[in-house]
Image (cartoon, rainbow, N blue to C red; front, side, top):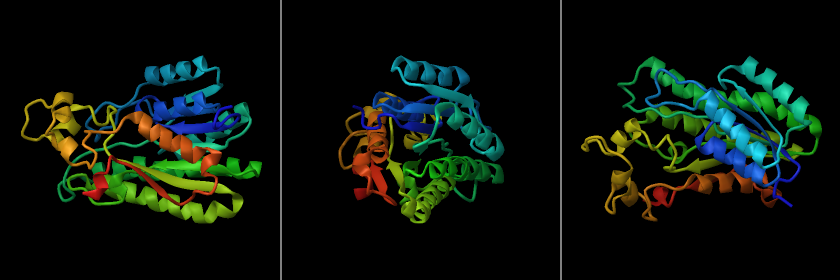
Length: 279
């Protein structure tokens, strides 16, 4: 018997990375999956985003686990399109119990140097996208009357300031506030709302030229070997001296919060950062 057996879970940003891994982890533990992703790049994000082929691969991997899956190319900034897709998917699968609002992007720059477009895109995707996801999904959980679990992907950058990613910080501080407020407003309906706050995670959001240059500005063409070197700043910034946590570590946190093991856990920020915030 899986830890979320018989439940239906929606995951945003599911084409690859944390979103795909969350969807697979929930499916492994018995959930049917609604998976969506924008499946296109964004002009102010300095790395490639997931593709439609990758979203289809996510669906195929879920189907191999003998779970039902519905996918679509949907932008979480598009409230109307998101509402329509969620309503259709919930009708097809027969309900909704778990929401993992994972879609998010990262960009770099000091606050006084970033453009209005860069600011807007970070806030629109990371914060307004999470809000739109709540608006599209929570009414379906409420309609069932049996409670549920909502997990928003925030960041340690939503709990403490990190220089040169200020617009990202602001968006993730907002996600934490969104989670806590929703937890208060939905608690009497037995809908739990929590935020997972990762540190650095070994996904493409970390493993790309722009992010590596952020960590190693004086290194020409920095990459994985630089991050994983024994004295790397990526290691020494953490209490546990690893350069990043594995994507499974975040998915395990999401699974815990989605399961009945966390039935009285709400309004919390679950930090998975190898002790980065202790320093």
